[in-house]
Length: 396
Ligand SMILES: Nc1nc2c(ncn2[C@@H]2O[C@H](COP(=O)(O)OP(=O)(O)OP(=O)(O)O)[C@@H](O)[C@H]2O)c(=O)[nH]1
Ligand SMILES: [Mg+2]
Image (cartoon, rainbow, N blue to C red; front, side, top):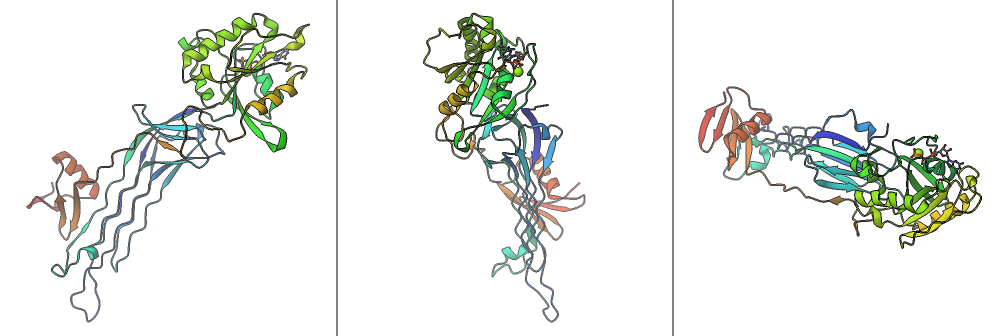
């Protein structure tokens, strides 16, 4: 199965706690503080991998967590940084939040998006020594990592995509021109999921072409297989519109598909088209299309059965697909990836220090419930002393 959607909960690693330690040496009665810093928690990163074709590998994963930072120790040893987690996705994957807001668009090889940042490590007590405070009996605890619910959605990045009514011969065409072997049969909706093919051209050029299910009138209202799969046409620079020329009424059938493309939106009805009048072997005369339209760059009559016109078609394909690597058509000047909605990273207004007997909250404490949660996450146990705003409480 081809999966173009996945949902996943991710948690970045918590930062390690700062060390609370004093130097112990023979002949040195009162050693100075030597607790090292905690390591940073691991990030959760979404990474575009050209080797992947769809999101099926993520279907069974519901939850991913990056590693915790190590705790700082005595003799100023710093904790190790937590292991990051990489989520590998195919090129063309978009990352959205639960409300459907676009967070990032990974359209180029090895584009990356940090979906959840690891928490920073706490500073060890060695860092708090001052001339007037030579024995700091506290160290910072590490900060929690971010967490997020992500929706992943794949929109294939291809040079060209096939469009047309069911049974027009789209899959037959892809078999003819590419290395792909999609199923071909004499009934509508043979193709139920997208198939990618690579077409070899002159000077070692290659094009990727996507075959998608057939479209029919009313697809935008859910008739047939609907039109959600048209998402995979969004990033194609050229549409190869396949029409069964043996069926007659070519112009009318061209317009049927056109209306569905327009109903889908996303500019699909403005995309340049290469029109293929297929199945010429069933006709006595060469068919022609009477539609005058500036989007139609070329019309080729061909037969996937006999191979007639296929060479001309492949030629036209390479001529009409620009040489640069495919990239989204709608946005211009894309950086390596787009972060559409940079999250506000508000720094914590408080920190939790670890002391000899428990914990101390410094800075502006948050509302009680949030503070309790933060203390619990920092590892506070029953009976521990907690100092907040000058008061000392016993943790229940
Ligand atoms: N005679 C003839 N038959 C063809 C030609 N091209 C395709 N066909 C036949 O048309 C039927 C449909 O072909 P497909 O390639 O499965 O059509 P499709 O557009 O992918 O169909 P869906 O996946 O259902 O949308 C099959 O029986 C093919 O053998 C052609 O050039 N000539
Ligand atoms: Mg097909």
